[in-house]
Length: 246
Ligand SMILES: [Zn+2]
Ligand SMILES: [Zn+2]
Image (cartoon, rainbow, N blue to C red):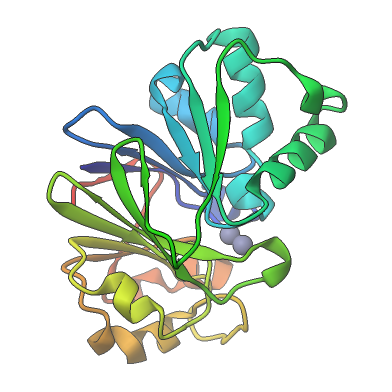
């Protein structure tokens, strides 16, 4: 399994980073996106990722910096790369409704597009492990913004490895089982020492590090204060284009 951090930014382009998008591939040929935020198509093109090979997009929640790239992905599939392969769009409950609303908001009328490829939707929830493009997916409830969710974190299992990703979340004890035994864990760290009710700060995360039994932890989704203090963190920080091999 290989995870390319296509976008490691926050919701505001801080530090010139692209918004959240991860490209996950496996030895068996799986290719999925984990989140696809606004502007991700630019990052995906820059990274040279084969868009037609992407079998599924799995969303953690429905904020624009994680979800807003979907309309451009769909129109690119229709008009540019002339996709024919089936596409699975997965995420928290009501993902199909959210997708239609995003299409309509971004490109009015486009929610009625007919695609020359099969589009299916899958609702993922913590009580229902799923398999997405051959990758085992287990969801965990995160604490972020219920208006854009339910917000989820995921453990992805493939090639005998586990990659865990928290999406956006304040500290929650659900991060403990999310991290347990993972070969790599990608966690948001939005501020350095400003506690927020919907995001993690480094000081809070640092106090919980003994609880997170992942072999490797990488920070992402850094806002201005965290980026300015990143050298004080004892964990690696993601960059756009970083490749993580769990
Ligand atoms: Zn969010
Ligand atoms: Zn975010």
